[in-house]
Length: 550
Image 1: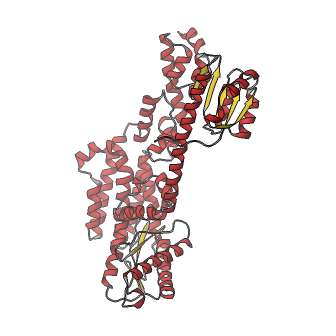
Image 2: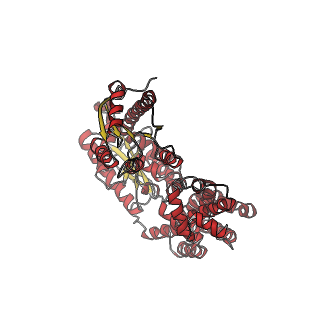
Image 3: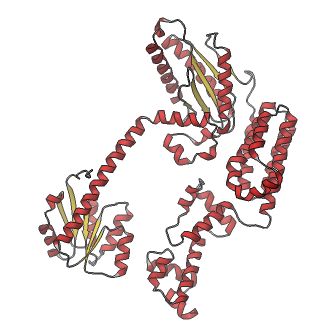
């Protein structure tokens, strides 16, 4: 398939010799190539002003010009984020210029005097690629339009998988949540509300088509009511048979209050506008997405019990009169601190957090279900967000002790007495602390930082950024930066620079390479910048260093 033809375009010709720009403008059939406007400039600064005013589709430029030279002109284009294709037409064939041209993504580097056919072939290649990019962009725009049109349905299916498949928070990075338009808090505390439209012997829904229209209308009413709540407070999921699930998120108190308010409003609106009854059931609140399916199961079972009654009312998995327990919010805060202390390898903080949680669950008069929720949250947080990330550190100890968080988690769901719940959780935590403390004793490493250092050692010749590394580990850049400095005593850039310069010094001692070659071999495309960094670190330029110490 041929690429789409690009519409009328503009080309900017830059050379300090007027005769060159005039010659190129006359010798090529620009109109046949797709260009309807030919711009020209006689120096870099004039070219830059012309570029910013007209935004040409192609630039042909010389390098050596008064004021702003060609390389500096192209740098400005790239620094402003423009990907405009550039062809260099120059009398200079020096390696440094060619290398800089590559770094600046110049598409062709032609040497003067270039024949017309050479220039024409280069321009045709650029136009061909622009046509391909245009086709791709249009396809991409069409795809994005379709995604935007269906994002509500896609989000519903995504949340359905989160709830029904028991997926933990650790499986979802921020980029994925942003794509679906889902707030991060969705994964850290919520409950399920199930709405069931009651199909009576009613003339309005006697036909299947009318009944489906009623279900659709009920969904729209629910969506409209949710839009009036705070952002990220609730989301509808796809119908499951006769039930419309709604996920309400936030703290226990807020989610329960929102579920009650929404259920009452849906029932009232359905009765008023559709003249048909709706029943509702609210499952228990759980602190982690891993357990949302339990809330759905509870609400589903409640609705099944009242299936034959046909009454428009609300049922609760928890006792109706029970007040939200504010003490639990504090416990879940301790659990987050405990997880962070393991990641940061702060043994004393780990012990302190566990001690606070243990004293709380032993000393407070919690209901069995609240105790189960705390123990489940603790084990699942360790299992998903800590244990999996430190698996290599714990495998040996697990083999020796039989420590397996998944087994403990399953037991917590099965245990019926408070004593069994407390014993299983305490045994797990004591073994875990002992295991990690033993692994960490005498070591200043961290699995995340070990990965960063390994990446630097393998890729120091390439562009290495903390942003990309943090994204690959599903950590924030700030968190990884602070953790790196805490473990190594250096910032990421200090460590990377020192490592590159150590490699550079080794290459200097071989006396086999030019300075520009060494710069490239250790990750610095710009030799002059490499020399500045080297001198700032050692007090000498590379050439001085080898004379003094070589």
